[in-house]
Length: 114
Length: 116
Image (cartoon, rainbow over all chains, first blue to last red; front, side):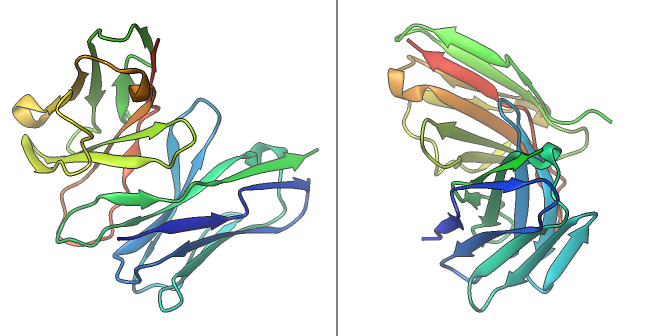
């Protein structure tokens, strides 16, 4: 059974800092890994999707890496801004043909202080 | 292009009542999923439709939950009768039908259900 763990559960940083969020998963046989952002009372916004054959993906100030062999992914946020405050979730599909059942971590709640 | 839309956004019902949640996926997306997050827990998979067919309903908690997707367009999730532990946020998501693993799954804003 796939289990996804995110550390830390909460993080508070001053504006401008670079930061790293961590995600680990127990079953390395994954199709891909997806990072989401959730603002309070809102839905999930997809940030980055990394294919199993890739090692990293970048979008603006965000960079996600994937190390399948060690069962880890990191989300790097450069030059953090108060608008980055949200809960960040990572998720991996349970590999089963074309199924897209995602297993989520419990998230990291990020607060960027102005 | 409209994203995944869900209705209602918030609902408060009494224990024993029935609630029906609706999801309109992104146009053209054959995959439709329901997930939920109950208080203090991770987001959990409920079920997966491919067009109008249930591909995987292994996450449905019990027979008080019924999901349908008639015609392969929008989907409904009915909870009958609702119990206190059903309170939480119910997310719908969709993605295109593909043969690989490269497609992002898009989530709606969620339907926030409170059973009192």
